[in-house]
Length: 137
Image (tube, rainbow, N blue to C red; front, side, top):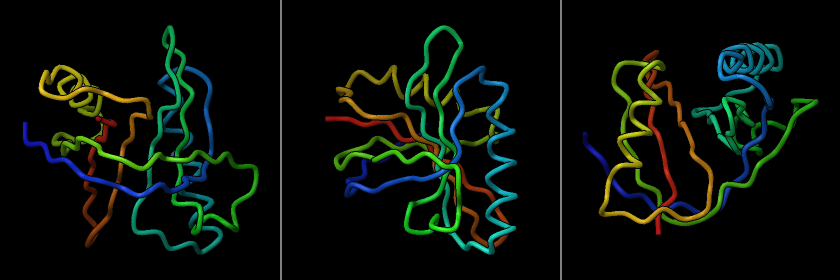
């Protein structure tokens, strides 16, 4: 698995939250994407942020950077902390995301820090590129 380390400045993600089973995540993305289209918002990336997960119940936000989300209503906002993240590309599409997160967590050369597990989606030239980010010290 190919990885890289990035350093990010703090930023905010605004979107639609879920507190429920993992199976409901696609519905949040469908809702977010419909609102983005309806409001004519142009964002070059989107984020899935896992705020917490316990017993199969996830608190998750499907969103975009907050400065793009001013036209959205009924949203939640989360601050993504500044610092280092280990990043891995996801090959195999959305179903492969949990596998990549688990592989990153198994890497012994890195110490995790407090922060959120993040999925980053970009859409260059009608292609979906997915990365997973985990905060590290």
